[in-house]
Image 1 (tube, rainbow, N blue to C red):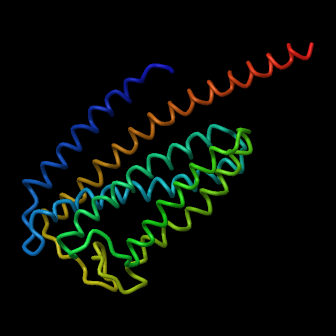
Image 2 (image 1 turned 90 degrees about the vertical axis):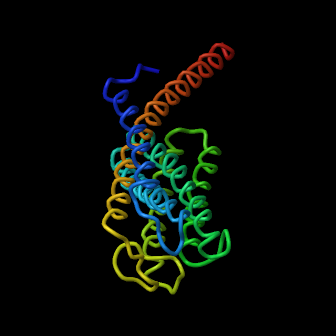
Image 3 (image 1 turned 135 degrees about the vertical axis):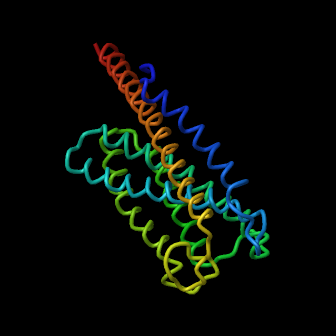
Length: 237
């Protein structure tokens, strides 16, 4: 694998600093929420990880269209990287949401619309990773991945608008919806936006690392296939 570029090394540091700053803002700058108390501070990371997770799934769908038009395997590497990183962030979103829900709703989990669609979204892309493992041919695997992520991307907007389409106890953060809109002070909004920006930078950094790893993995796979073909050809002679 080629050495990290200077820009990527700088991004590594910036990402760590931004996450630390977001944590400090959530703990000390944002005021204590009167009803939920300290546990509400989870909210800033819950929203930020949900944002980058959904954004990554949408990016994977866009990349899948590009692959289907170009048939260039580099887009399959990029799409797979987007899905894997997004799965991690969206999984963190679900865990943080459960931590927040326990004192707020009195339960770790309830099958209300937002949580249900979020769980389905996570399982859809987990299935994508598992199904890819069963396809050996790189081009067939890439075509399958492109079509799957394109169709899977349809579940992202459904998850986002679920609290506006159905009656739900999940709070609406932006705009009016079927449940009560969450009231935030100026410092709360600033902390939320900073956290979203911070985790967006972290996403880009991890995305870059995963693409580099994917490129290296493809080279290894190509060399293995070439070695197997050479061995098979030598045996037949």
